[in-house]
Amino acid sequence: MNHPDLRVTIGNLVFKNPVLTASGTFGYGKEFAPYVNLHHLGGVVVKGISLEPRRGNPPPRIVETAGGMLNAIGLENVGLDRFIAEKMDYLRGIGARVIVNILGDSLEEYQTLAQRLSEIEGISALEVNISCPNVKKGGVAFGTDPAMAEAVTRAVCAHSSLPVIVKLSPNVTDITRIARAVEAGGAQAVSLINTLLGMAIDVRSRRPSLANIVGGLSGPAIKPVALRMVWQVAQAVKIPVIGIGGITTTEDALEFLLAGATAIEVGTANFVNPRASQEIVEGLARYLTDNKLAGISEVIGGLILP
Amino acid sequence: MNQFEEQAEIVRQEQLTPEIFRLTLKAPEIAGSARPGQFVMVRITTCYDPLLRRPLSIHQTIGNEQVQLLYKVVGKGTRLLAAMDPGRQLNLTGPLGRGFDFTDRPAICLVGGGMGIAPLYFLAREILRATKIPKCVVLLGGRTAAELGPLPRDFREIGATQTHIATDDGSLGHQGFVVELLQQHLDPGHPWTVCTCGPHPMMKGVVKECRDQGWECQVSLETMMACGISACLGCAVPRADLSGPYLHVCKDGPVFKAEEVAWL
Image (cartoon, rainbow over all chains, first blue to last red):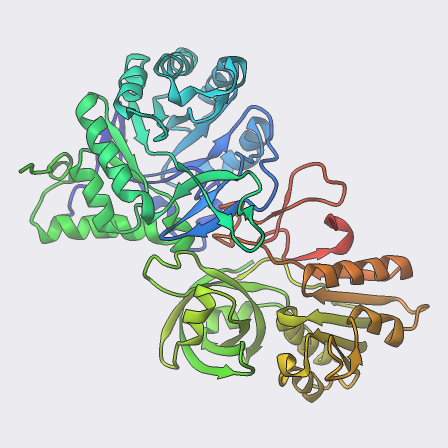
């Protein structure tokens, strides 16, 4: 039997398969080594890194909701220096592409992160989280304003030799406008969706379930929304789209690929089933074999419209 | 630190009280490496509601083969769990986290309240299995005798002869708080190590008493968590000085030195 070809290309990067792990759901890779053969994955997107370490929000930070969860972790991370010093050695050896998610609260912070990480061996690409508030612009999230989204993309691209993926927030009226703006800014790909803003209340105490009051919804509950947005964006831009949002099974991954995603990221499912990403890689190969398809490219964008 | 993902078959499901259940699972990999105070993440359903695994502390391991969990029905997840019969398979990940440190302690006191008693049984059994058994006192608290069910007897049967009970209504043992038993049963001059798990106000009281007496105190904490392997970062607890990075119950705990964490 011929091995089905799962390879996909994003910018000038070839991935051995289209399955990546979403930032913030897979630690720095090592946490999942007892459960997953990391080298079977297309890539690992590591926990978002800021220039300085961030403490994150006070607890409670997470709450389960129907078919999903809300989180308000608050971007807790070890900061750039410790990431490079403590996490990169291990990541260089995992045998999968390493994508570093970056976040900042000013254009300058994004630029410095892009520049410093470009000098580090073993990083394949940057994923830019633009859902953070721009402190200098009154705290409006970079990702909700097309001009700011374009500006931050341009800043990162100008200061980095690495391919730049911009991760889009779904908390906007028209996500295709933001997608086109970051494409104009020079992004090699977009990934979407980040979490949907939500809320839960504990009726016994009458208090919000999260200390931060609101948080990001993720998990199977958001998949239809994510799929719709991926489909819309795939038609609106020429650069590759990476689909994210509630992907838990092979079938979920296939839906995103059919809708036009070149690759997908597995997020919250990693918490529920630490082997989910690897199982999806295996499931995609089986799907190609079962359907006598030579490669995953025959699936991507293969949606048949009525 | 070995961690495993294991399809575990339910061997026994026992209802100890109207709300408390004891679940015995065949999980040799986890049973073979678990230490007292560690926990497992239990995937209750492959459906999406409830979505997340439930963290449950290990009540004991049996013969390097079985893992026993003691849990109370408090919500959707545990209600589904309680309805499961022997033969059913459940996916577990574990053993997770940092357990109790009880080596070379001359005198150990275990203080448990409600479901916090669950990990202390494993701990008591391991302490009492040592070749040189330290002085060991067990203090258990509950609302009523009925709520505690067979647990006091379970401790006595493994040789914890100094097991004392406190209940809110006085239906068994001392009427009042379990922390009051510390003053009654622990000689102040002695270098005690106190290991506690239970409701926050109870542990807070135990921690204060230990600090006043100069006793070592280890606490097992419970929080919401999604993954159990320090990826979600949901299980943050503040450090004692309220500054610096948060501690994470799944990795830095669930057992902490009392002085490491803030008692708000």
